[in-house]
Length: 253
Image (cartoon, rainbow, N blue to C red):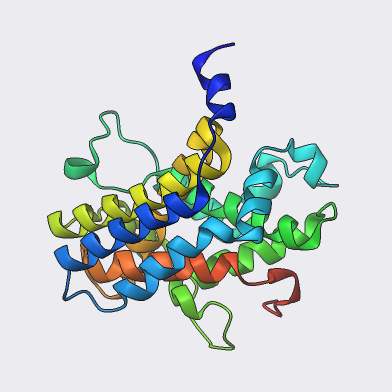
């Protein structure tokens, strides 16, 4: 049995791990005492240790697409969706991808975000998703990009356009924000290791891309060319709210 398989048999004392996470969260708060909303986010991240829907979304990420969908979208089908078309045209990976120098966001961040919306949709519906589900997921994606944690509210908005994506592509990290982001991501990653062992790495990478994408979107919405600590907080709030929202019941079309 290889090392990865052996990790499945590690016994984790959940109460002990929760205490470790609590102490780690306190250290983050002490290091970033002036970031509004940070405690709420850290409390929400720690609550993922007991979240049933979080477990279901992870399980969906391990499933074959044919298990979750009665309609497998082709490239041509997806390109009919305006955000997919824009992302495919603009968010291309540069020949030399160095996030700190070339910009943070590439197509994989968009793809991960869209994919998580589908995973959450299936986790709540527990039935095969069809073409109408893809259209609804696209509508939710647009709302997330502009409204962030207000995505479920009946608010009018202007969907992202080409200019939005060009700004998104040029976004970079502010150093303090990146440090905060890494600490929260590590806290969430530790929860994944405890819950799903080493198999959580792919899921963790997807979460990383989603959070980065949402943080960058919030920066663009506020006419900034750098991701700040407040964008990191909003991105995490948005993800936690998305996880805990039954999007099958949202009227967004």
